[in-house]
Length: 273
Ligand SMILES: O=c1ccn([C@@H]2O[C@H](COP(=O)(O)O)[C@@H](O)[C@H]2O)c(=O)[nH]1
Image 1 (cartoon, rainbow, N blue to C red):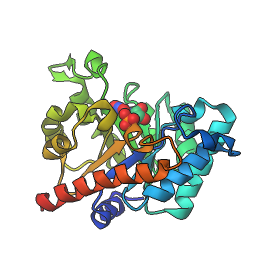
Image 2 (cartoon, protein in one colour):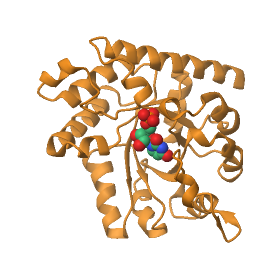
Image 3 (cartoon, rainbow, N blue to C red):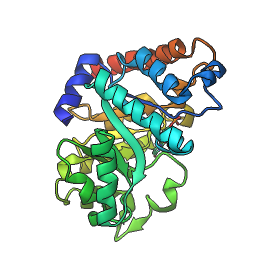
């Protein structure tokens, strides 16, 4: 999917919501554990109930890898279901990969070719030759960790390197890489006060913004400082939506939470015009 198509979906749905599919078998409704594939059954019900109010889904691969082969198969079924039923929805493999070049190429093939995700999250720490193999894929997007939502972001990302914070070095340097038009960036919602500075460096790049809801980030603040002309934001919520209920009504409860966020986003978009 191109960023132009993503922007069109945002305008059409009046939503820039990304729903995180972080499936924990200890948190899903107990009756689903009797299904042959409880993880996929849960995801399918959530997708069926919420696809009209969001523009992206983000399975974090840790929640699938933790269940071994069955988890990986559930991830494959989930992405195949999304690509078949909802090809207009942007998909993100939150895998935080990155390695020496030939290994990164294999990671890129795994997520872009085999699993056919639109994007994958990548750590910038190993530099240009570890990221460019992902960027080489046309109409696929590499979402680079810039300023993450967790407290540990302050351990390295905000430290000064040659007179500039490391996360700014990541933003500026990555813009010089080949096929950098395929870059997006992760910036945590808990770091709303940094968005204005970030937008000076990357005015129109899409930002994947996790950390609203369970981590305490605020949607209004992120939009105030981070919204671009093309909107340029994908606001992720995982636990706050998918675990709204662990009873038989879990999908309806998730849909209600997602719709509440979509309505708030529609109002923000209206006032931004
Ligand atoms: O900086 C980051 C990068 C990734 N994440 C991931 O996003 C979701 C957030 O889940 P919530 O339940 O909405 O808190 C999860 O998959 C994280 O691993 C992040 O939170 N911060």
